[in-house]
Length: 195
Picture 1 (cartoon, one colour):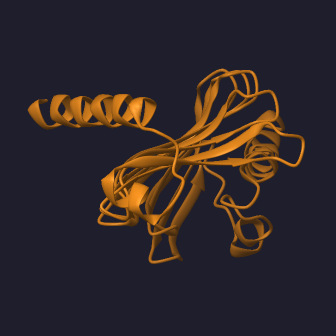
Picture 2 (cartoon, rainbow, N blue to C red):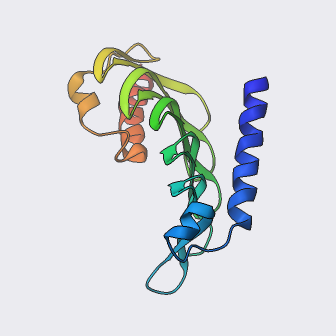
């Protein structure tokens, strides 16, 4: 609990720090502390990167075309550190992933546009490792897939159907989570509906 409170405090200070920094004009600014702002060709802000001591430090933000936040990624000493979050244009969270020492490490949570949890994916640096849990729109667990360094150890729908390697390899949960989840849900729920 104390660690969680400390992390939330760090993230809050990092956000405040980025919001009060001047815009980067040169390398000297990156040393003293500034925010690099990158714009779309239409003139709208696309990305903000906070710097201190010449390295990314604070929360980097990418924006949708309507200026709502698309991605927030905390950096410490030029490496991703903390919880990366991405959002739909409607403002609902699309997902979150934990970074430690510059690498993704732990459970990645993925949500649908309505804000409902679709998947909890255990991974190390975006290689599936551990249990992946998939959920229906009404928040019911429908499948568990266990992998070790990307290799399938166990995969099963909660109705008892075992998922084949062919079914699992059909889609990539990182490249197209919605399509992958819908595809596996169709397989798992079709089997249970026919009983």
